[in-house]
Each structure stands twice: as structure tokens, then as C-alpha cells.
Amino acid sequence: MRKKITIIICVVFGLILLRYCITEFNTHMTKINMQKVAMPEIMVETVKSQDIIKSFEAPARVVAKYQVNVEARIDGYLLQSYFKEGDFVKAGQILFEIEPQGYQYALQQAQANMKSARAKQIYYDKQSARAKQLVEHDYIAKADYDNAVAQRDSFRADYQRSLSAYNDARRNLSYTKVKAPVSGRVGMITVTVGNYVRMNAGSLTTIYSVNPIYVTFPLEANDFNELIRIDGSARVNRKVEFIFSNGKKYELTGIQNFFDNKVDEASGTVTLRATFNNDNNRLMAGDYGRAIIYSTKTDPTPVIPTKAIQENQEGKYIYKVDEKGIPTLVYIKVLEHKGDITLIKDGIKIGDRIAVGGLQQIIPGTPAKIVDNLPEQEVKKPNIFVRILRKIKRIIKGNK
Image (spheres, rainbow, N blue to C red):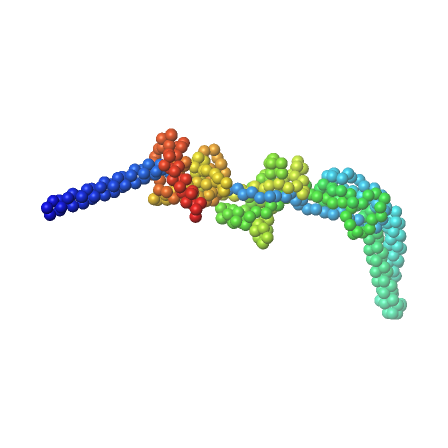
């Protein structure tokens, strides 16, 4: 009896053990099969480089090389203007005329005074010369000679004063013709004909230079430092293009030949200036647009297949794959699209590995199987297990 009980217990224990082993085996095989089915297959490439000329963009403004206010240098009534607003004028060209009669009379009087003083100077020059001869022969006293010399010097000084007054009168008369101090385009007339103008009381009009012309733009300090790194120096003449506010590009290129000596604390930018040829007068002072500045040397830049880039509400991204085959979502900044390839500004480095195929199968943080080729159907649509796992992961993240 005892033997039978022992046999029954052994059989029951054996069945229980067998059942446990079968269950564990089935569980293990299920996990393996699930892992095989759920592990996405992806294609991976190493990020390559391409030597390119880097470009940076910034808002820009057109500025005249010089801006000159035309002012009256004497007082008087404005008789006439000799130009139209917006005309191009040359340096020395007459712009306005101020009533000249009073200054003509002043010049005539100054000229008469000068001639009188000149005549007296000549007379006393001769008198002093005669006195010198007489005093040498003791025909006159030394005091008489000294008096003659003093009179000569006094009338010489009178002549110089009258000559100075004459020249000043000539200068004032010349100021009745208000001339352009520089060449350029004339702005609006602020004082019309018939008004009384005063010396240095304000500008009659303004002249803006047109050729060459400046374009100034505030470039981010980081971008400026990047230009310095690429070119090896800050003092480099770089090519600049100007884009009008309507999106059209100015046909001529300029040269960036100036940069400010400080970073603006409020905006974190450095002001740069480019000089443009403006023979066609298309660039007008005060106009706004965009400036694109180019490095003078090439720089190795990450380049990836355009198909590897995806986009969501937060921006463009790729999947970076580590040595264990685990993909990580990484947001990137695109520098330029060139058909099938894209140049990357920021986010990845040359030598990184990224996923270029099987992107729809990827679950960030979940190991993936790296393959050389993918079946067409697997590239287009993720399998059911991948979709389920993605959904579970989203639910878990939402609970967290």
C-alpha cells in the first residue's frame, strides 16, 4: 500500500514538473518569436561630409555712403532753385540762388577800400625808402626816419585788413549760389523760393550718395564666429547678395568690408556692412531686404539622404542609431536641400550613423535589426506587432 502511494506521488510530481517545463518552454519560445517579429528591420548609413561654401542670412538695410545736408551759409531771400526733387546732381552744381545785390554792394565797397589802402601803402613804402637814403647821409633826423617806417608798416597793415575784407565779401557773394557739395540724388526741398533763409538755420535739401552704396545687416554673433572659424580671420572681404523685400535678388554682388567692433548686448548681433555698385540706381537709401553673406573658404558639412528626414510639429528629425542598434529621435537644422541629399547645419555630426530605410518600423529606444535591403511591403507599412507596441508605448508615456 505504501509503495503504491509513493508511486502515485511520484507520478503526480512528474506530471506537475512536466507541465511546468512545457509552460516555461512555450513562454520562452513565445518571447523569442515576439522579439523576432517585433524587432524592426532598418537600413543604416554613416553621415558623410561635403566641402561647401557656407552662407548666412540676416535682415538688411540700404544706406547711403554719405548723406549731406545743404544749408544756406548767408542770410537772404531765396530767389530760385535749379533742380527738381529726386534729380541726380554733381558736386559743384548750382542748386539755389540767394538774393545777391546786398553782397555785390558789399564787395564793391570792400574792393574800393582795398584799392585805397593799396595806394596809401605804395606811397608810404616810397616815403620810407627816401627817408632811409636821407638818414644815411644825415639829411634828416633818425626820429623822422623811424616815423616814416612806422607809417609805412601801419598802411601795410591797413591794406592787409582791407584785402581780407575784400576776400570775405567775395566769399559771401559766392555763397549766394548754393552749390552741391557732393554728387548724389537730391531729396525734398524744405524751403521754397521767396522765403528768407538764415545761415545755418536748417537744411534746404539733402543729398544722398548713390554709387557706391552700402548695405548694413546685423549678423548673429554665433554665425559671425562661424565665418571667422571657416575663413581663418575676421578681416576678410566676403561676397554678399541683397534680396529685395519682394523676394527678387539684386543682380550685382557686394563686398563685406566692414564689421563693428562690438556685439550688441540687446540683440546678440554684430553689424556688418557691404559695399555695392549701384550704376543702375536700383538700390535706394532706406530700402529694406535680406543680405546673404558667404564664406571665402569651404567647410566640411554633414550631408545625409533627404529620404532619411522626417517632420512633425516640433520640426525636422532623423533617427540616430548607436552601436547597439538602438535608434534615437534627433531633431536637426537643415542648411540646404540639394535634391536627393540634404546639408545639415546642426543636430548630427560627420561619422554618425542614421536610419535611411524602414523608418516607419522604428520605435525610438527599441533595438532594431540592421539589414542591407528591405522588402518593398515592409518599407511601406509597419507590421501589426510594431503598431501595437507603439500604441502601448504612447499609452505608457501618457500615463507618466
